[in-house]
Image (spheres, rainbow, N blue to C red):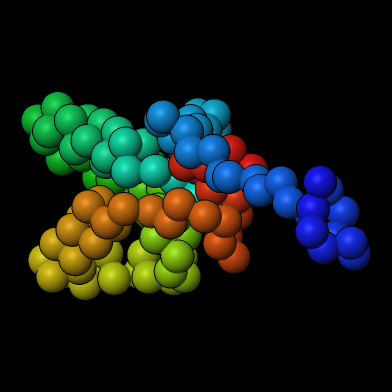
Length: 131
């Protein structure tokens, strides 16, 4: 029992957070088209490397290259917005992507290498912790 008469026995129980061994994965359409929620580093890099491979293949034809560039802008922006959300920053930070050279480097380093928040933040529940 407890020494404090006013404290219930349940109050002495402590809930410890349970961290997942690997982050939760999102559905394909949520990753590619939704601007809401959070995205982990693995999924962020998957989208961007997939885009890079497609662009390298499409470099043989300029019209195909431009078409794929335009087609992939929505999924790239969606993945960046969700990645910025996972870091705890506004999705508007993804607009730095359009600054020539510097924007690309800053986006890939900050969004691609920063670890996401382990806890729930203003953009959604944690990808790393069972809540």
